[in-house]
Amino acid sequence: MIRLRRSAGLWLADGLVLAVVVVWALGAQRLPEFVLPGPLAVARRLFALFSDPEFLYHTAASTCRVLLSVVLALVIGSGLALLQRAVPALDWVIRGGVQPFLNSFPSIGWAILAAIWFTPGHGSIVFVQVAILIPFCLINVGEGLRQIDREALEMAASFTRRRSRIAFLVGLPLLMPYLLGALRISYGVAWKISLVAELLGSTSGLGYLMLRAQGSADMTTVIAACFAIVALFVAGERLLLDPLARRFAPR
Amino acid sequence: MGEVPSAPARTKAFVAFGFCAVIALAWVLAAGRVPAYILPAPAEIGQAALKFFGSARQMAHLGATLAHIGISIAIAFALGVLLALAAHYANWSAATIHQRLSPFLNAFSGIGWTLLAVIWFGVSSATVVFSISVVLLPFAIVNLREGLLALDRELIEMGASFGRGRWRSFAAIVVPALLPFAAATLRIMFGVAWKVALTAELFGGSRGLGYMINIARQDYDTATIFTVILFIICAVYLADRSVFAPLERHTSRHFGRTGAK
Image (cartoon, rainbow over all chains, first blue to last red; front, top):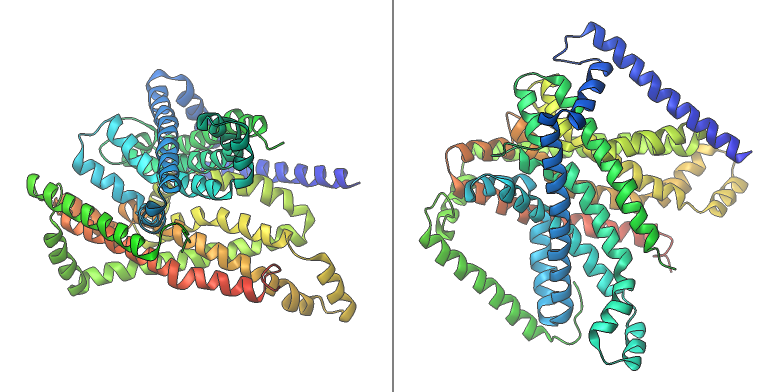
């Protein structure tokens, strides 16, 4: 009974999505294309974003930079969190100073500063994205390190003296849920917020493509790029993060 | 703040002071070696700050940003409450809201909304408010949903046995139980709003701090950019510490299930 009701709700949900697309198509017929292009035109452009070499270059550039930034931010954020745990005196400085500082730093501020400090290119964009993502990783991994069961580490210490073995066999698995949480949050933020890095002084990426298309009133490309970001975000969650989460799920 | 048993207060203060001193020293040294438009010296930022807080026009920009953020949070919060309640009480809409609308909004890029809104609403405050609200909305829906899921069913049943009025039981039981989640939602929204607001103002606004730092960027007035950034960091941090964190603590102590012990 419950299952029937749920699937009915889902049918309704998909029906409403379809209705929205129909309303969109009808509305687009009455409005000029630079205000609202039809769903078909957007779908064609969306396809081009993943097949046409010229568009694909921008899509690939954004994807590679997002993945690289997330990995770098995770490494640096975890490093800071470990430092905070290893040197108790620094805990206060990092948790009370560095973390709120980075967390409150406006993302566009990093983009502007990077545009002033560095020559535009992949490096400066990755810098901005990493700077935006670090606090999310630091907060999550730091929380994980605080939650680690000290008794489990003590037990491990009674079995072996090699600290690296303890870290890899006991510490890392205990930390895994928090690392995955950090990964998930920063992956989402990377696509949603840190694309701002591509708006200033960049010549590649979906953000740049959107801004350029908006400047030339090419609404089709703006909307298609937005949907491409939604698609890449969902694909990354389903193909990368969910399998990882299942693999390392706490048993 | 965090308790570090192994580091006594004096060491903590010493380390913090040393850390700040090292940063300040590095800043002064670095600023002396590069042109001011790349890294202004602390004194120049002090001057820019005085100019910033003394000028009525700059204060108007600050006021515009605060208004944008306040209105957006209000809109997103109200819509989030409506949608979360609709999904909770009208079963048929739950799948639409939680499995279609909320993931879609959650995956949509903030910059995309801004650029679309510029075309739809022009360069205006409406664009800025729209972009911020639509980014905040999924946070509100997801958080308030958690609150509704955590409602104590037995408490509601008990309420139903005391009185028949659904509105009365809603106002007396559901609303107080949701308050801690509402406070947490507001806190998250406030942090995210600041992150998005400046970007939206820079690309779609004709007023506000984001607009201002864009002008400063074109004039290579880096000192003003630093002033605005540092001001925002202080403002966000202080508001979080002195308004939102106490609000969250207060509501969860008075209305939360765990805090009542």
